[in-house]
Amino acid sequence: MVRKSFFAVMAVLLVASAANAGIILTKAKTADLGQGLSQWTVSAVSDDSVNQTINGIASPSVTAGQGGGLPHQVWLNNSGTFTSPTQGDQTPGLWNAAYTPFDSFWLFDSTNSLSIGAAFNESNSGSGGATGLPAGALGTPSTGFGAMGTVGGAAGSKAFTVASGKQGTNVALAQFVIKDGTTALLSGTILTGQGNNVTIQGFEVGVVPEPATLGLIGLALAGGLGFIRRR
Image 1 (tube, rainbow, N blue to C red):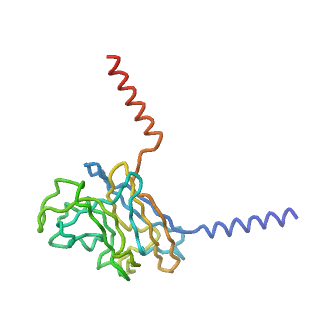
Image 2 (image 1 turned 90 degrees about the vertical axis):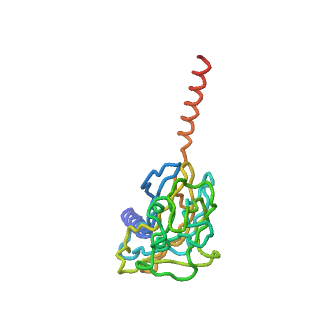
């Protein structure tokens, strides 16, 4: 009886382990840009190369997280005509390479991916963004912060083609520039070549101070004020 129970438990554990095979999002801080901005790369990672080869994302939504954080945007002008929600929208001949480190965008373009449904888009507050970026063909760029999604909130997706060589088990999907001390929230459905797609809700991009860090900052300020009073 004990032996049967043991093997039954082992069978359950093995099934649970197989069921847990899936996809997660990861984030990596790739640059400190100054002006209180940091650049992050978000990737989708699969632990199942047979059944879940990642190739894109459907109906993405990037909204404000802690501290009201939103992606930093660079547009070629203030009209809203020349936006850059994807790498392919960084228009050759008009786009200045100096803008790329400061822009938030999906790593899709017409040479490496296919699109279905609503186009990806973004908003831009036009204020509070990076300063000092050089003028381009259309003048001084518009910088600010804004949400990212699809036009009208309708369903839309982009997927890397097999020929792009970007499909795999660890696929970089986007670059987001986030104001330090805040986060933005990413939701969407990660697409796989096999159709075993996974929906992600509220993945935080960026970093806010931990409570312990805030406590240390408070102690440091209190100590400094005490020193000033004693003097």
